[in-house]
Length: 331
Image (cartoon, rainbow, N blue to C red; front, top):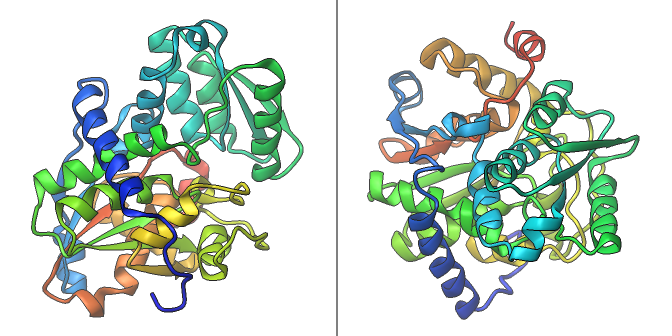
């Protein structure tokens, strides 16, 4: 990864994060499921890579985000539980936080954009959250949510810029090591970087030889470009099927230095490659996955020559996509 800025996270920070991940791994059961790691016969045969799928789309609320949200809510002080929390989300973080809050009796207010998936917005509301839709971009909605939380004196729960959330997502890495300690690489879709930072922090200690591959849609690679620049930058974005990874990264995000330290490589994929990956999984595995999950599948296929005969995991991060959108994508 010679084109990326050098790491800026020190060893004690990563060690402390690993300890937090270990604690979350024990504390979140059984609400957070240990998801299956299942071999894809089709992808293995067609790519020459031994491909295993980490089924985070089978979590409650349909995405990996339930891990981080559950860990954050678990660790809230009593005062925060009473007065509630505020977050911003295009859908998956919001659904996860809404369910975690509902289970723990914590009121949840969510900010999103008017362009967010109607399916995901309704799902957040159905789980009991108050949802406020703003006519702006995802990063601006996130910054407004943070301002409102500060003004009201309640916690703002970032989908990625929070070590307790990252520790919850890192339990995926703990499970991967338990299920397949001999992996050569893990492919992970990246938005704000919380999931890949958690997975990378876990596997850096447990299996330091595993490649941690960050995967982005070409149309919206905000953190990937920031990694190359060595600082958070504004990146022009185009519409993408990977709405779960869309949007900019907030200034000062802790995921930037974490990803600098932990990622082995980065891969960009086109919208056509995302659609093909969605079709592949639907046809061979009989699963509906959202665009962000397909980003990781597409990236693995793009890198197949590099991993011939090797064992890799692909994180299927979510399934939350409107049926009409899915059918249009795979036709």
